[in-house]
Image (cartoon, rainbow, N blue to C red):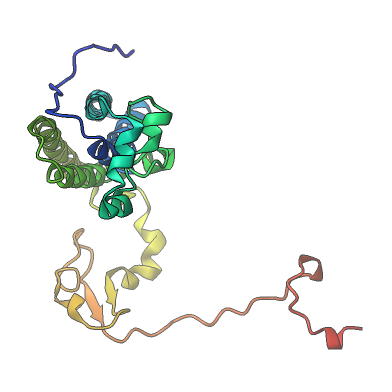
Length: 279
């Protein structure tokens, strides 16, 4: 059961309208790593969670908080659009640099939403369910969550420097603080799950099933110009699960044969046969 409370988690109050910034903020609402993505990702992971109740509870706690963050960002966008008009778009386009880079005010915020937020990114591309991850494997999902919070916080940090509006920045600071803590939470969950089951996903896959390929599990192949990658800890030392040692292969050689495809039936019209030999 969900219950909506009218008050926002944190105060949202901009100093002045800024339709151009409103368009940019759409990215952290409906973009790939926006609040809509983490909201849906955590909630679906929570809905589908099996096993220890504490993981489901954590997912539902943070997922429900993200519902509130979606509302906060919508309120921020709406305030940035207050008083905007079609004339604003025309005025912005008078500067050729602004017109070329920004394309002016987002016309959909004027035409479609009536000065409101949209479930889209900053270029008007609708939010997509494929942005979210809910695999049913807790470690895989927690790592995806850490990635999502990492990218989301990075984008809010960049937006922070795109405005001098202290009201907007105050909202961003709250979002940045919460995204930082959410990274801590996912890191803690990841560490606990790795301690329980190991660092490789899925832990339940039988090791004996890949024993014949074990030697291939530790090699870094030099498939690009230069050999700087051999200087990293991923090219030497022991694997994180303690099952083998890394090896750098400077001149990798193929171990398979070139594929030879059969000619398909003529009904598929690949036009691969020599017509001069047809009977």
